[in-house]
Image (cartoon, rainbow over the protein chains, first blue to last red):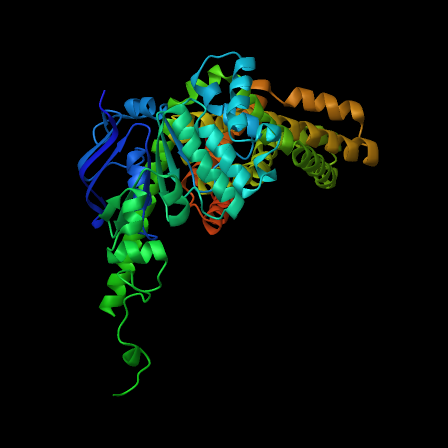
Length: 266
Length: 264
């Protein structure tokens, strides 16, 4: 068994004729938390969707747990997805089911376990995210942070080997943000999973990830451990980590000259 | 001038191509739905739940509308039949109108606006809030788990709702004709029993409502599944469901009536 759960080699992806990702090389070892960072629209969510098998690479190799995602058929993809969890940006909980039923959903769909055992397993997952007491609530009764934690419990229901997180920190208050970050780290370590976190929250990520890839305009522009990233002098990384307004990512969207737009004569 | 004409032709061409493309996609959707129906029949409780939300929750509007339609038929029918001195035939008029036409058609129109719009909005919102994508990521096919049970729930509910609509309509006709106006009760029921044929009238009405059920539920599910994942997209899809379903019901009714009752 390869030490790398995810191997991406020279991967490119295009929406019809618009290139979104170009020559991406990335790997994730088992047990690691990897962050993919970059400004909005840089292609990081597309990369996550490619890893999850929602789209196929236009070119290059993408292998998840030994499965070539460019070649896999739907049956193989579904088999792989039983070993994969995904946390969506706003949780994507099933609104017609209680918290407990949401967490038990995959267990009911994919196993023949008796109902009592399914309930116990779902309660254990909810306990791991601190929300056993919320088992009977409906998703509409949860706060944003609680919904994210229930979704996290749901994504670990089948003890997956890989979890993909799409902007897990977006819109959370500082307490929920810290709780979510700690949970991602703790669950990864406890369950021996691999976690891929797509985010633009630099400070929370630097505290809990093992390795970071920076994506800009579809290419990886920097990578390294949190210490290496903090010490990086690369202009893009510096601008991103310090939240500077102007730099390689310009403040202004490309436009003709200001004077010409205001029709001012020279 | 020529440019304007060419643009017009080009726009028309785009519309035709779009329409054909949509027809192809919806046919593929319908076939996939049938292909994945086996799983939901093995878990019949999923279908029962949908029969409740599309059928049982539509009962009030169906029963009340049926009663009033029947009462109006009683009044109007009596006025017309009285002119020819054949008010005893009121039972036949009410029953045949309801069982052959008004029951299946009006119940289906009400079903499209009550249950069809709800199905589209629900599926569209599930898509917009990434619930369907989440299901896909959990290796659960949304067509098998979400779409197919709703389809069969709607298809089972529709003939039952149409039958209840007709029954309430006949009750309404009796209330107005017999109880209020004073048409002879014996003639009302006996003429109705003699004139309404099980195979010719009732069975054909059931077939009609089954076909309407298939059409309305498929349109509602497809519009929801195909809706752009935005508030505006879902609202437009919901409107399209009601408009397209209503036109489909009326068009199909004409075709079915031509085959069933005209000896074509």
